[in-house]
Image 1 (cartoon, rainbow, N blue to C red):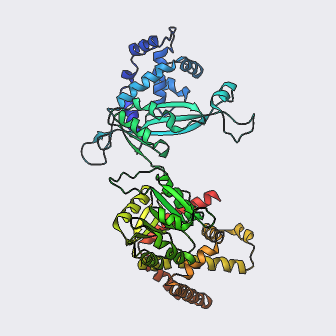
Image 2: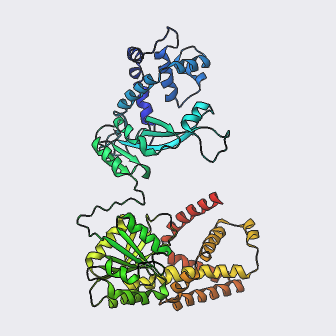
Image 3: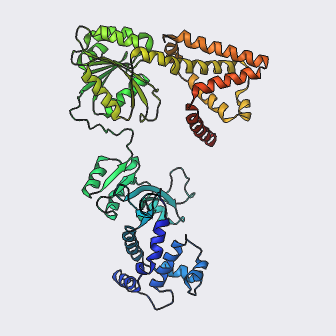
Length: 519
């Protein structure tokens, strides 16, 4: 945890050493600053400035009591303005070197204090921000202002890049730039502020191979968040698919997969009903053939294209049902022995990021291509779940059929109750609002997508039958006013959820807070 307390203690202890009169006067001469002999000379002013910061930016009127000196707040303010900026910069660097000796309280093990290190390294936090300033013409010309403001309105805004010490909270340096400056532009300019072996921690804006190279050349380390579009697969001897063809590539999921593989450096061919390239031509020429068509025609397309897939190629699908399509792919490629993998992306084409999204993989034929596909998907930050096709389809009976069915029942009931939806929102609770969001999102999408997902699932009748039976049982309890039976139902379901309840309370509370904040 970043805390300034150890650093403040260190500065308080070494304050006289940090602002020795001879050192301050020598630095003033070195930067060409001339001064008159007065009570608030550069040495005294700098000493008071540090004293003010140590006491958490205390009021200027409080400084005479702390220092024993006699002066007015106005005089101190003017004296501070006279200090040369380069003098302060050099003193900041001296304080930074002093912080290398800072020790922080231990967690109760070992000596009373421990060095402010993480696994033997000092940590530095690199981040960008912005701040506004007075509306002067020179500020407007140099820094600019947000584009959505009308001319003559608003204030100039500067971009700020800052480097902090993670253990002490000490601000090592800042770089000021015009508003529309990327964080990366001046990141390397702050590397000299760190010592060899230090670790720089930053967000995805600082994660690039060029920046990592400059960090390495400075003998530094880095922990940077990876951008979801960044390729991070360094597996040795990984198989290269020069060309990937998608049947149905003009659709939502087909387009998304095309971008996914394209970002990984592969040539992507799109074969659809209205493309010059026919699906058969794509199947004969590509290294990987992806079937991304509506569920109802998936097996038909597989049987038509499977015989054209070369023996050294891979045939894969992205269907929500796995057992029938995987069997069809195995049969359609039996004479060539082409590799086969069944996949099910557990997300829709409208996701903002692939990072952390889940994909289910079902093995068909060919270990080499299966491993290649797993590594490619992992390189884009996707989470992989391997499953038997029958196991997958039964799981989807709960994850998809039951979930979509209850959402559809809710939407249908609301639409037939004759209520004014906007009027109900005057009395909404966070839970009701979240349910409405999910239902409205569901019905905003295509019934041609959801219909086959539910209708073709092998345990469809078991799942919907259990839902209807549970609804009828609960309806009877409510109709009778049977409180003991209601409590018994609660206890039964609570036992089913078990320890998951604790996680659900935490996560749902977080989601409810976010919904309330945005509503």
